Length: 422
Ligand SMILES: [Mn+2]
Image (cartoon, rainbow, N blue to C red; front, top):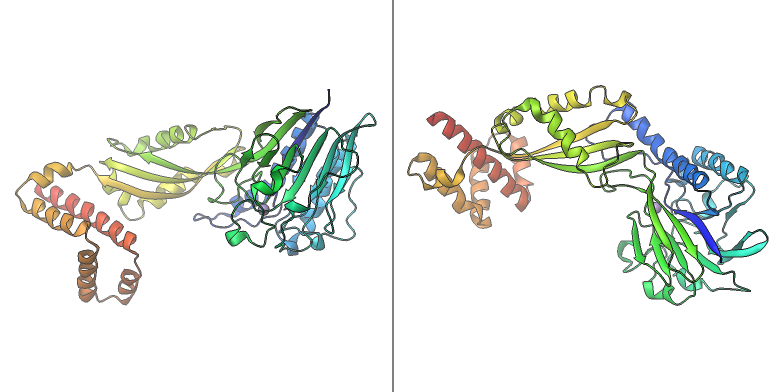
C-alpha cells in the first residue's frame, strides 16, 4: 500500500528582527535573532530523525526582501543536509520572500525544488521509481498577489496515488489580507487533492481533517507576544485512501507566554520566585527543553500589594529574576510584570461601615459605573492640576483607562485610610 510521510512547515521568517519587548537586552536580542535559524535546524533534524520522504515549506522562508542574503545562504546550508541524505524539499515563495527577491546566483542543492510564479507547477516524488506523490505549487512573484491562486490548482497528467497542493495565502474573509492570495475553503474542497499544505497565517490550524486535509502549520518560532504558545511543524503520514495523520511537533527554541499569577492570601515576597516557577510549569504544553520569555500579570487581594507598588520595587524584582538567566541553556526571561493586585482589604466589610472610609467608598462606587460622572470627575481634577505633563496624560486616557485609574486610586486610598485607622 502506498504511504508517504513528510514534514510540513511554513513561515520560517529567517532573520526576523525582533521587536516589541519591554525589557530589552543585547544578549537576549542575539538569542532571538538566532532563534528562527535554530528552529529551522530543529525541523531539518526532525526530517532526518523521522526519515521522512520529503519536506514541504509553504512560503515566507525569510522575513525581509532587503536583508535576506545571510538568511538565503544559511537556508541553503540546512537544505544541503537533507540533499545529502536524499530527502527532497519542495518549497514555494510567499509575500515576504517573493521569487523576485531571491538571489539569482543562489545555487539550490540537488533534490530541492522551488516552484515558479507563472503557473501552478507539479513535481512527482517517486519511491524506487514508482511515482508516489504529486506535489503542486506556485510562488508569489512579488509581495502582493490579489488573485485567488487556489482556483488555479488542477490535477494534471497521470496522477500519483497521493496529491498535495502547496499554497501561500489567506483563507476566509480577506480583510486586511486582500494582497495575499485570498481564497475560500470551498475553493479547495473539490479539487481532488489529499492535502493542502498552506502557509501565511502564523497560527497553527487544521481547517479540514480529510478529503482534503487543509492545514496551516503556523510559524515554527514565535517572534513576539502576538505569537505565543508552542510553535513547530506537522509530521504528516498519508496512506492511500485514508485520512492524513497529522502530528504537531514543536521546533521553537524560545517560547513567548503570558502568565497570570493570583497572589490572593500571599504575604511573603520571598515566595515569589517559587510562585513564578510553579506558574511557568503550569503553562499549557509546558516544555522544559525550551527557553521562555514571559509577561506576568500579578493579581489578587494580597498583603504584598503596597510593597509591590512601591516605586522602583518591581523593576528591582525584574532585575533580580533575570540576573544570570541568559547564560543558561534554557532560560526564563521576564519581559514585564503587569501589576493588577489589590490591597488585602475586605471591601464588603468596609462598605457596610459608617465611618469616613465607608463614605469615601460609597462616593467612588457611585462614580464607577457612570461614565458621565467619571468624565466630570476627571475634568474637575484637570482644573486642579498645574503640571502640563500630567494634564496631557490625563486628557488622552480612554474610557477603560479612566476606569482603571479610578480602580487604582480607590485601592490606594482605601489602603491609606485603613492603615491610618489602625
Ligand atoms: Mn508569514
